[in-house]
Amino acid sequence: MAVGALIREAEFGQSKADCISNMSIALKEANETEYWLDILNDTGYLISHEFESMQSECKELIAMLVSSLKQQRNEI
Figure (tube, rainbow, N blue to C red):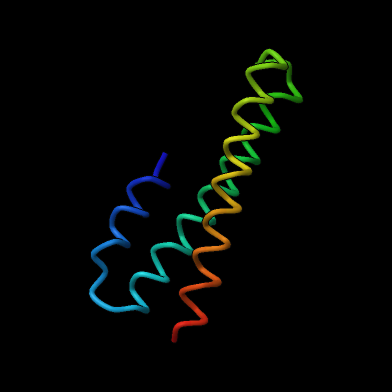
């Protein structure tokens, strides 16, 4: 998952804009991950409790990224 690497890269961004850009890409990647989890669930590849656990963590990560981006954008 590229999300973690992008968040880590954002920590040492060259500028505030660079940090926001990396966090935005991480959010897009997390959203794509949620999409693939839905596909895996819809095709029966995942057991329901596995899906629910991963989906919950993914949604939590998305919410944290959205919150972080809102805060960073307000600081500009």
